[in-house]
Length: 143
Image (cartoon, rainbow, N blue to C red; front, side, top):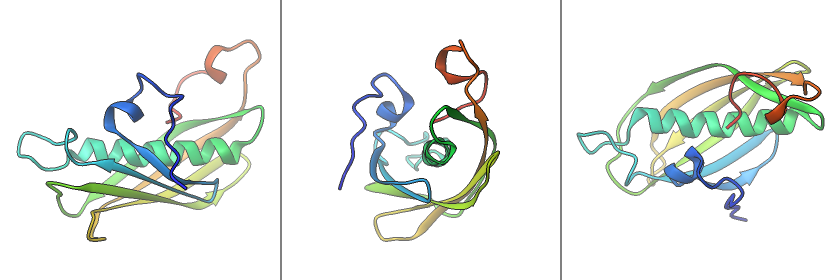
């Protein structure tokens, strides 16, 4: 089932054209077009790959956190293996560790041929919602 999040207008998710394909705390899959997300040399921008990875890991961590809790990104790193000039890329986030206070994911970004373009790791702090705080908490990122 393809899930297009239409509740996120005006966000980076919309701007990058990210479409969710599979969503659970343990595994998330989303696609993103290369077109419109390139650097001046015509290759997929590394920052776009990282934004896709952070979106997937953060959404997974929010699901893992559960009701009344939020996920706050505390670390992300990425290794870029090869470039892409056209088509769509697919990010697959797999939970490495889902604890009470931390959630970590490995995210693999591949091209249309299934070749690995980027490997990222994201860790999010899971915390209780601060009463009265807007947006569910202070600081950090969640998608």
